[in-house]
Length: 218
Image (cartoon, rainbow, N blue to C red; front, side):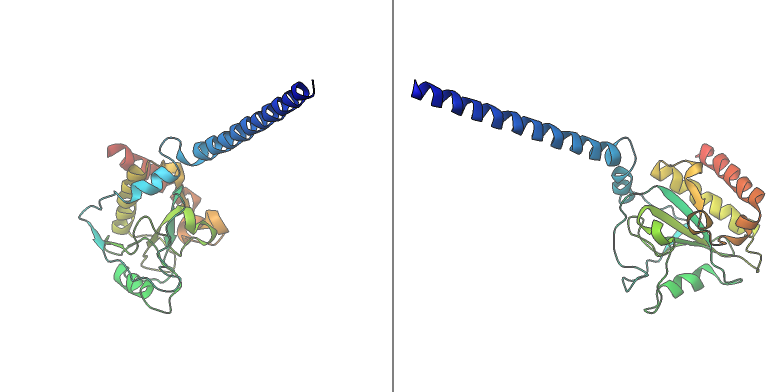
């Protein structure tokens, strides 16, 4: 009788352990599923990040990557990619090359993935999969575009504007993002950047409409 009681006790202990293990496994699996759903579903999150390594830049983009140094280019990879952020350089009359070279200085703590110049030239300064130092707390999940402007108003010239639309539409297509995923620096921190397109909301809405037209044509 004692042996039978001991056997029953051990069977109960084993069953309890198996049940606890099953519950723990199920919970872990559920957490894993939630994590995968959050980051891997469809073409979002990490899949977009991985896709960045396979993007081939068109011949109208001049690739001049700055060297890894300090905070301007640390070589840190993006966590994921959710938005394209439009900035203005804030230095009227400066060229895309001027700004790219400024990013490359040892003392510089800011950078952007792209700079669009006064003549519509486009320079790539960072690999798409690396973090820029342009969008504050959103550096980890955004691609940044700095835009040159001829005067203090911050309004882009027609040639520059067309290049911004062309570049942004290309990126949206490659990253499987929508026009609604294009934001301003202002939308992150409240900074008046890009100045003209913060002070003139109608101009920003027009830019987004032009982006949609360009994106639909690709």
